[in-house]
Image (cartoon, rainbow, N blue to C red; front, side, top):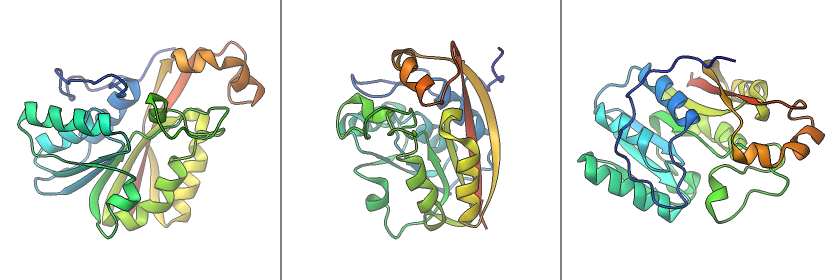
Length: 227
């Protein structure tokens, strides 16, 4: 199965990734492709939820945006700060929960590659798995972002969020629409199953989240505009 063609070269090529920090993968590149299509003018305020290495935040900063990045992992925060310093780009990186750290602020654009992999247990509170495990339906963080989006965005502001088709693309579209936002799927791609999905194949099949012998995962970028 062929993947959607992505715009190449939009992410920094020399990012540092500390151990335990999520490195840019297919979902990061798909979101970078969607970000490249946005009309991002210098001086616009951007928030990235779950910045990891800071790759996407730095892509926005390179275009002149004023970028705030948040992550619950101190390793990710330090990684993003280091990558910003190496790239000589202004980037405000904060540690903690995105809702608490951005209370009272509104943005022109919000980006997120949240944890979205369905997992047998609740979302972990520590360890590298926090970057991908998101509870039995994979929506532990996705639903929080959907509910918070209208308060985070200025009128006309845009949310770009990437996640797996296993999490329920239509559910994300419906939730954001119920919040009064104009919602579309801005990008799609298919990627081979990675080691995390392969390790829990039997559980995913039992839950009805994957077909027997399935080998490809659909990724989508959901775009929601605050009206």
